Structures are given as structure tokens and as C-alpha cells.
Length: 78
Image (cartoon, rainbow, N blue to C red; front, side):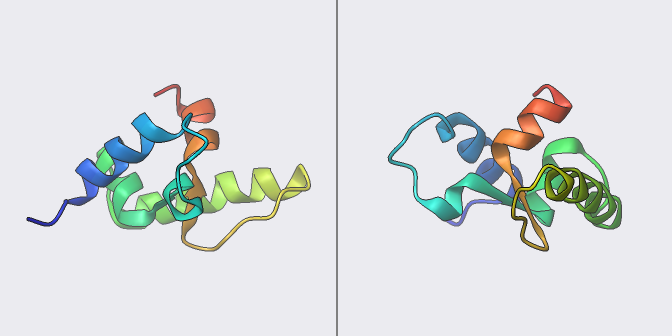
């Protein structure tokens, strides 16, 4: 059985402090952010874009369509 977006997001949130977590598990995709925050995907894209711009202004590298799990936890307090 395949995981849905909310299950993937919750798994990534639980495992973020584990140093053995693969690199791709440290980022959320738009469907996962939308499911986690209970917002539409278009709103999730705008929100992710805003947070990625904040990270870029701090000198961090970002990826379009991806958001750091750690930064989302920090900004949204989940």
C-alpha cells in the first residue's frame, strides 16, 4: 500500500532529527505541505515560495517545489 501525502509528511517530520535520514527525506513536496497544513496546493506553492525566498535571503540554497522540513517546523510551529 502506497503512502498518501499526509502520511509521508508526518513520517518526514518524525524522522528529521535522525542523522541517518536520506537527503530527500529532509524536504517536503507541495502535496505534502498542502496536506499537512490543510490548504490547497496553489496556496501551498505560494507559501513555499515565500519561505524559500526567506531562506535565500539568509544565504541558503533552495529548490523549487521543495521546502526544508526543519524550516517549516520552525516557521509554523508544528
